Every structure is written in C-alpha cells, then in structure tokens.
Image (cartoon, rainbow, N blue to C red; front, side, top):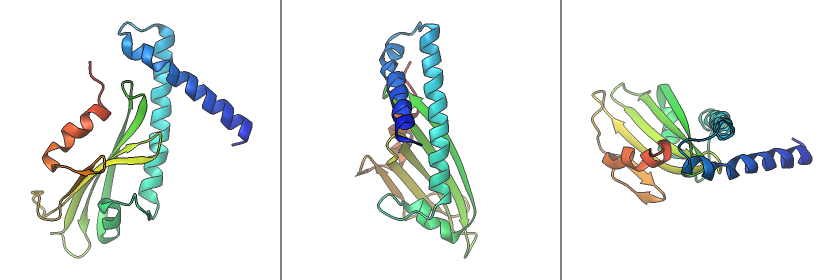
Length: 168
C-alpha cells in the first residue's frame, strides 16, 4: 500500500471511529450511524480473519507465543474456531480463538485452549490452556493469564465477556 493511500485509509478509519461515541450513547441511532457501525463491524471481521490466519498458519516465535501454539507441533487433528466482535464501548475489534487437539504420542494427551486478542494492536490480552485426558476434565498444567496477570480458569468467560459482548 502506498504512503498516500495508507494515510487516506487511516484517515477514513479515524473518521469512522470518531463516530462511535454517538452510536454508543444513542440507542435510536440514525441510518448514517447504523451504516458507520456496519462498516466498523465489517472491517473488524476482515482484520480478525487476517490476524487469525497469521496466528494459526505461522510458526510463531517470540514473547507472544503461548502454550496452545507451542503445543501444536505435538498434536494431531488440531481444530481452531474463532469469533470476532467490534466493541462499541471499547471502540476496538477483538478476536477470540478456541483450539483443541489430541496428542501424537497418545490419544490420552489432549489440549483445549483459548486466546483473546486486541485485533487493532495485534496484542494478546489473555489466554488459557488445559491439558486434558479424553474425558475433558482438567488435569495439571493449566495456564490462565489475563492482562498480564494469572487468573482463575473458572473465571475466564467472565473476564472476556466485556470484550466480546456489549452491554445493553
């Protein structure tokens, strides 16, 4: 993307985002506001899909590598599901990735995991991973991190809810 085109696109994105507070504060939004929200949601979906592809297809190295990606090489039949959400309240796009797979050495080895990403900044917000036997009951080796702090895996869904759902 050329410099001028990139500046124009970024200016358009900034204008769309500037309209968001009016959307969040006005339940009976105008057709123009609904169009802006739709465009932000569409942009979020495209950006989230691109980030998901980048994360799941690359050999990730560095500080943002988490247990589920490192574990990937030792798994057969890895399965990924993702969902994106444009949050009006936070004026950002978020990506939730769910992962599950079974071990290469034994069907008794398995993992299920999730990550929450800030799509706009490509920043990992939180993660959990649970190595499990086939009955999917948690065993040792559980990891839960959210906003750079350890968390209780039982509270994971409550922690990510404000990012993946807008209050009504």
